[in-house]
Length: 478
Image (cartoon, rainbow, N blue to C red):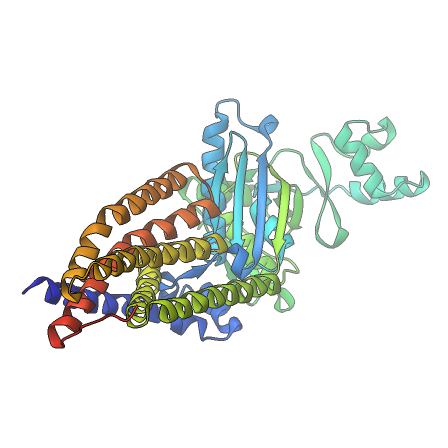
């Protein structure tokens, strides 16, 4: 095969590959939003094949978290704690069904979390920020709570005030005597209070699974948990020694439920019951499966991009892109006639290849990414302008069309390569040292520039060769 045939078949193959990788994306975004959300949560295989929209286009939640270093295990370094926290947060987010999250370390104490498509930032913070410390504590059966409630009534104190004093260690002696030694009062669900042992009988560190099940009391969902062999042995011993007593299930210092131990439980399976909604039960099972954070985290920055704002960004970006491309196409046709039309065809194929590459890489498209795409298309047009101006100069010197085209491509090649290589280096540096949106811009710019070399030089040269071989062209009319 000659050069023209090689470029022609290469172009056809690349067009086919690009269409193949883009078809799942076209199919996906033709679905209704609710159906897309449902498929994401069900982990539909098509989700791994589409070109995703970033936070600025799709809407979602951006959080910056800070690790509470004062509550770290002294044996654990801050960097190790951050890496562990990132992994746990990623597991929680993945299990919760968030598509294409960004979870990364920033500096030596912060974690950046971006959750595209999450419309409820409070639920996102609850999912990420839970320490997930699960404890099983025995409940006091001496009637201390009723005595304490009566005494607080006499003093005209609320239970909230009591808990505040308990936390600060400023408990009056007459109230402190009402609670057995080694016990404390904790707040439970629906503002109920429970007197439990200060130290747990068992923690959730030995959990291996947690899942939502239906059929609980009054139809509420329950969370079924399973222990590893060590946890099974400890749980069996606790339940066997305390039959008839209540065992409180405490998550992050809050009593979820306090069921009665009716018999020993030797198989390592237990059920957390309560007035859970489906979402609450799913959230609880998610954080329990993912494990406990090495230390509490707090949100120090929060930004929410609403879906409507994301849609506005898409519409504005598409509108600006179409107007810009339309003006370029019109200019090239008016100024360069048929040659301008060839350059416009190359630009269209360039765009198809860029999005095909991004879809094959399962990349995330952002507004800076769109900017990188438009810039690379502009560079492709610029390369064609250089070539056509060189051809024009050769025609003005009296050269034939065939010779003018050959010399035009030959003389413009060095300038095109210089411009594209310097842009590739810039894109590489932006990707290496940039973060977030800057990386998105760098990726699309890098691939766009590479592709533009092929479409602006080799593809257009192939079109000219085929055109000049099949007909006698005496003038290019520009």
